[in-house]
Length: 546
Image (cartoon, rainbow, N blue to C red; front, top):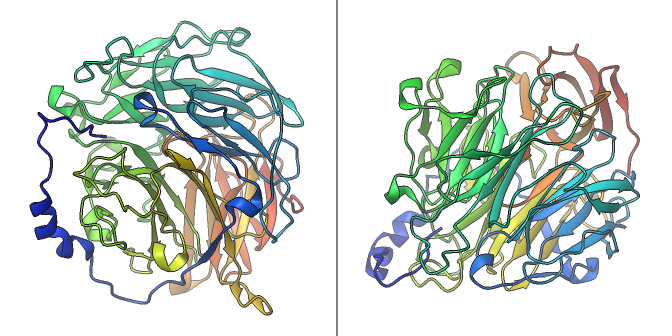
């Protein structure tokens, strides 16, 4: 993210006008257009009343977390609010009906919160919550029935009084507790000299018997705004990708850390195939788009978003960019008339029209009032076509908000198999949109079939973070295979834990299998679509419905 200072040159308005018309047309639209989902904003009627506010140290962040803590299979919502108190909402939505979010006391009401990620840290079956803050990170233990208590001291989690802006977690082989990674921004003791003051991230590894040892610094640090543990080469061990903001002219770049058992974290190097990449990194989204079994990585930035695909095979983390080729540059506003470059934050792959192809939602918004960047900067909804390219439909879908977006989440809030959208905005109210069924109010129709899946393990990593799920259906030329990795981290300051969502087009029955973290593949199991399932080591079983 770039701050506007007089001595820093930025794109001129003249250049923006010269390039604007051409930039809007990212890739020629060809082939059959996908079905466009329809959204209706229900912020006020749902009861969502939260504002993310604050000056300089709150220009980044603004995250939201979604997770089910009362056992009804509907995700609750936790919204950070900067200098205001964060708010927790119980989900009271009726299945397939209007969204209803009821503010409730949970123990999570705190100020200076900028991001939140749910996970089960201690393996007791209750979801816990990591809250990123301007100041000490606070980690909360889930007590059941959506009540939480601070666990920093009990688990020996010490982050210091930093500016914490990113998070991810993984379970290393043989560990019952997760390894935690925290990203930090600039040195808060140097508010008048941000350039060159990026602070190192922190890696917390579990100690024998539970809890954590002393933090290990992730040096060098380059102002991390997003982190994601992902098994990039399907080797069974996750590496930590870090997207960094504004330090590249001081030697900074995007990073990929390898974690080997019993060894300190080490950066992948050029000798290992890693290519330097320098952007104003803000968010990470990951998904296997090409069908080769390896995840592509989308990186948000300021007019320079990237879509990286693995070029070097499983042996080398060598990536090449295909954002322009696939039509996901999303570098300028597509509606509203503003020709300045865009500022992108949270990004998330999800199948919003249930056609079996992953789409891409991007939250947009000016840092504050930066004149070199778009003020009218609508959120993007990029639908994937059958040929692998994407087409912009944010305005047609009803998601083109012009507020200063930050964090967000694409998630099914009312249990109807249709994904809804949450966005947190700086200096404005958070927003929520419900996806409407296809057809008409009097005659609803299914745009595409779906399946939602909860993963369960016996102990330790209870939610099977790091699992790969595969679905297949059809025969011959119509055969399809789609896959997802379950991760904790990425996006921009926003996380989800719970049901995994899969769109499957017109398939009424699919085959499902999983590759367990650090383990083997399960057998294929059959499942009817438009249904909820749980997959454990005992196999696949129906999980009822919200």
